[in-house]
Image 1 (cartoon, rainbow, N blue to C red):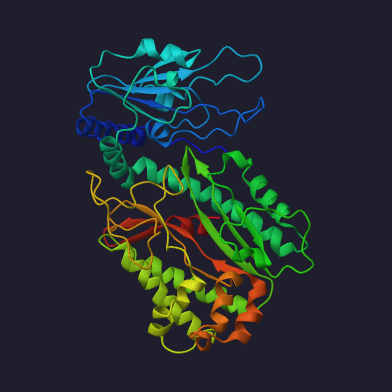
Image 2 (image 1 turned 135 degrees about the vertical axis):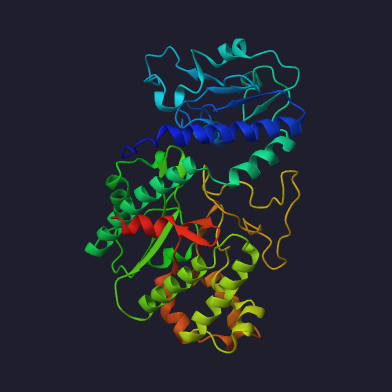
Length: 444
């Protein structure tokens, strides 16, 4: 992936102080006096000698911008310099990780280890240690018996919701990479005659990335495939006619993710008008992202705006209220307005009211929302409304009591186009928002 310049040391220094403060609070909540955070290990494929792609523990990269060094540990005891047990195995089959970057590593007592077991000798004396991470082999927990106590994780999840200036810079960098790659894919589509596989390769090539370096599996969908919300394939053969292109793809910068979706059409007809209307709807939603806004209300507002699009374009009939109450809008938009974003694409804390783990209430009609909190300053979330023509959801309506609420001639004409999603990454401000995605595209 293209090199991203590290942020000024002062930003990381301030970030680390906030991480330490969060861990101090988490240890206190869990009645613990030391935390050992594991980077994660390689898992071998069944009956094979090759591993699955490595995915670092997000709690580990919360401390240090390391994403590709398995079997390493951060060892933190309050009042002491954090220890980084950095695994550099004796190995001639694979390249050994180089020494960590000094711009952040000087904040740690860095100890090179050859095997995970060597980290055990580095542990300070502690009466009540806890282990944060996932292990397939309990020996990798270095003899620590308490793993991932919920009292500690709740505190850490709440802390991670609010992004530090360092994290915001990493998220902006991830958005800039994502914008570059999206532009490359859009240009390839505009050239015509390309397959989903070709479009994906154009995306990767533009930022010199491989699939394993992306924050999630990209959704690269032509025509009807755009109606499959998490479409996972990439056809190698270009369709005879390319009507629509939906791409949901991101990038990473120092372990922080972007998550961007755009939809394109090859003609200037009704579907292109729908894209324009949905872009306007999405920007209206972004304008309502402000500190104190209740996400659940924003989600409901999305359905009100969508009902307006359906009636304005003649797809839906009757009142806005009728389209919502009948469930019509949820047929065309069966997912949430968005989710938190950060070290993980679907970042943590979306259902927590407080650091004690009190859950927030989920709307009865939308129990699967990924975010159900009121928003606060310096949180980052996605805003991603959609409008899809999904036969599995539409067909039951054809013979239902609500069938007359839809113009089926228009529905059938638009179904071959699949669907629309437009997604930006947005930072909450005290009196508004910062749109990381639109800023990144504008800077190209």
